[in-house]
Image 1 (cartoon, each protein chain N blue to C red):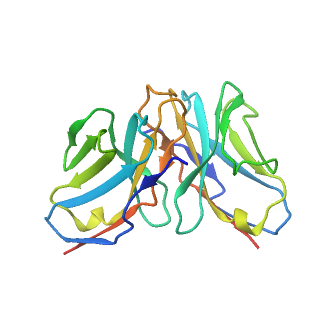
Image 2 (cartoon, rainbow over the protein chains, first blue to last red):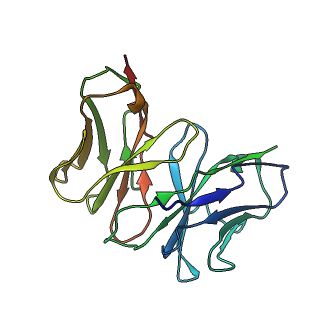
Length: 116
Length: 111
């Protein structure tokens, strides 16, 4: 079964440093997403991406965050200057279709980001 | 603020019993509803989706939707210890691609 692949599985970084989380969505999918889950809390939407641009973002996704699909296969989330409160599990997801006519996402296995 | 509410649990059921998990949502315009299973430290795994009022069955799982009451539930028949996980309810309002998740209900199935 096709998978969404995320690397690294665990990243430790110092506060203020930049991190890039990487995802390889399922090859024929067109819609891409990042979610995060702080330990013990709910899964929260960060951003959706379609046709090489952001289609929606949450209030969490401020100027410190950016996304990119640099080469047609990878989908990256960059956090420019990490804060302690950015420590969370970050999930990438992809779907073939978007909007109302779809069947949910396939999530990747996640990257655990620890900011120290 | 659009909300999805779930009882955090834990819900403890004996092996072989029916586990009943419930979820309410605040946005009356919500159109798509999903149940995800999440094992500790792992990513959410889609187990059921439902779009219309009524029941939808898939193996041991039955999703139930009542849009008038803004209520969606998941029944797990013949519960197994391997079903022990957190079950996340997620809702899509239809004019967006994002899912709004509940905090999840932790299910414990004991032998």
